[in-house]
Length: 85
Image (cartoon, rainbow, N blue to C red; front, side, top):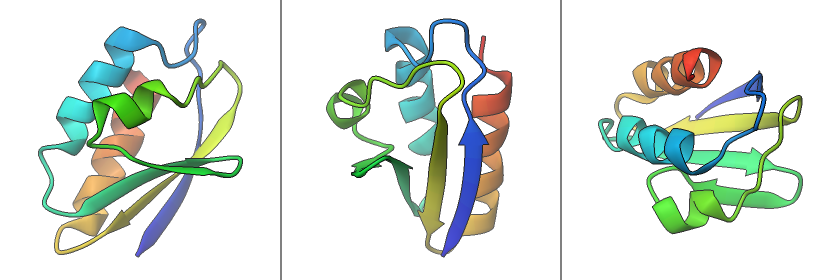
């Protein structure tokens, strides 16, 4: 299992379009991928779950990956979150 903290740098936080793209990115990996923020742990491959997060700019979340390609998945999600426009 890999845990990576990521601070959201988007002006509007994670809104509908970036969330849809994040779910697409997460779905490319075989590993289980979760986003943890505060007391919530959401499957990053679930569009409805991700929409419920309401993440704002400057907030820190944790990317948790577990499975056969967990390192690649953690790096891919972190890179996506740091570069999403």
